[in-house]
Length: 486
Image (cartoon, rainbow, N blue to C red; front, side, top):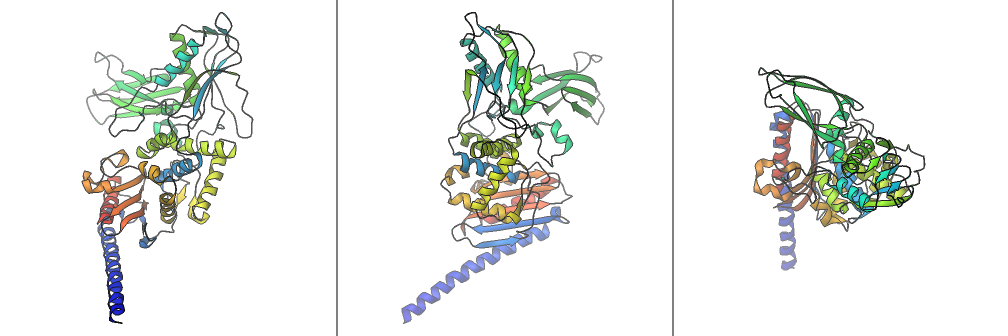
């Protein structure tokens, strides 16, 4: 009898200790919220769950729908990893109606058929923290070498960029109009080169009276530039950029140090075709006409493709997803949504990808009342998620067969990706693996924290409608992250 009483007493002490720790955790988070001026006037949602037990350790506004920004990428990358598998690859093919004749002449067009591969990019694979940009044209050059090795010496028609694997739906609803100008809002396409963007460097001319210089990387003659930029030693400097199709209007002032901007192109398939046309021309291939693009709209059948003359396969999906989450690459996330729709539903449309997403989230136990998803990247201001939906997804993926690969996709606190410079680079923050999210008046962080008290936690912190600088809101979020490690 005495032994049973002692055992019961010890169990009570254990639960009392856990309850006391939970209360202390709540107190610390509440204190952080009470004293953070950056979030005053905003709306904050937080949920923290102990993975081993499923116990909710902290919850506030967890069922509220928030603009999640790039926390949405947790959903698109989880969908892709689960539905496509970690070894899935995407293929780009160069096609012709028929093989070249004995003189190397191709009748008709040479068509580059995109299969969704985003890896002909400025971003090197495998992902490495702090790595410098790589040459995105390397893949184009390799494909061009294959074409000439196949005996092609002249093309009667032209070079066509074909992105019909996904219907033409460049910009999801809810993206802002000016997003389309910049690289982070690059149009979505099944044929992608250089993240569908170009680096633009603007600097002073050789003499004080000379016009400014404008150079692009990759060095493809794509944009037609109207340049009215002036150099001034007096500030403030302000560059104006306007784009209409391939017409680029530059005005305003820059300093003598110059400026660099990253611009989106308007038509990725045409952009790829222009690069390929240039690569073949440099190899001595004569081409009957200029580059062009072939698009498809949802419901239309993709055209027949003919004979394959060259092919490039992407790296395995896990490598692509790691880039998507680590650096928060919007275009790649959108591609993953469409690729899931293409492979699982027979159509690479955003609509079909979202239908597949809905089925996946139902399997994960996430209620439809906890999300409104219209894109794969979170750049849309129409996408909404609750912290509870995010934490439920995180818990589901930790129980999945891809749990190890999944966790490896996420930025590590103070070490790499979008968390490289967060948490003041505190070594303890490396026990946080989480996805960031940022838009105007929106900041979020959701993922896993290895707590000294509770073991591994799944958490979501989302802040909306704040007027404070984003850096101050991130400081508040990081403070909560470090509390979770205690």
